[in-house]
Length: 394
Image (cartoon, rainbow, N blue to C red; front, side, top):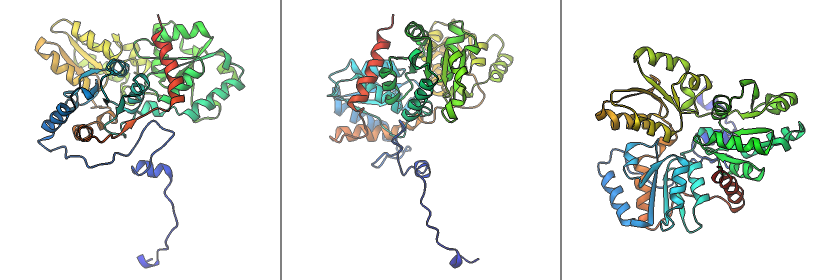
């Protein structure tokens, strides 16, 4: 058949295809895909000077937050660095800043908008900087899950606990149903509180943090946990399985921390005798069980600060942070390596690069508000309720 003989097909691209092509947005997801405006080339040698000049022009009107997993080229312009919740609280503590530029991902910027005043405007340099874990639980899926729990006759016994790494919609669901938010550092306290309120917990959206906290820190068994899969009818579980469970874990995970395996731990111990294995609780249960130390991003940093000179460490968390810590502590004789042999950056976090930051700062300096992240009032009210319950934890 010649080219002229090929019939024209009236085929319309699907929403998913358009999303993957970057030509559409998914309103049910906490991600965006579109960033209007021309970005300067990443090879532009003037980028650093341009970012510095725009930031100086804005002065106290702008406050730049940098998550630990950001690139060094971006971190250098951050007024404060930290994990997602620390940064959101830092933003709330700077009411004089008109613009909060959040160098992180979408759910973090949403949390900052929830916690800051109405006069402050939260900006994300690239709307495509999402979080694969947060995307694994949509509002529709979680509402359907609650219907399943209701039909099983246990919804009144279930308290939702949602990880900070979730969309504003999921935080709002949690607040509306009497639950709380947690971070990787206070997950045990949040679960203890939840079990004082009810008999069961629905833990969203990271199965690994929920399982590790329940089993490793609270003495539950793996049999106490069931995995709810939103892509299967009734979550792939029977009503009896739901009734017997203490922890109903959502089938979600971090694409970075989920890559570490037991083989990674065994391999690094063989390669580096005497190494200390330190991992984030978002890692798989078998990795956490085989590690020497387990803790949040802030815990990892503090552990390395307190480590003796000459000690050896294999770190199971995002590579930008591990590399930064290795360079920082090398003069003290501390050997710090990435737990896995495979390079693993957080791909969506790395969307916030210097060209996007320069474009953002220069736009704001010219009086053009770009990429504002704004949570609607009803969602904000319930999400804030869940966050306030976390802040009230003993």
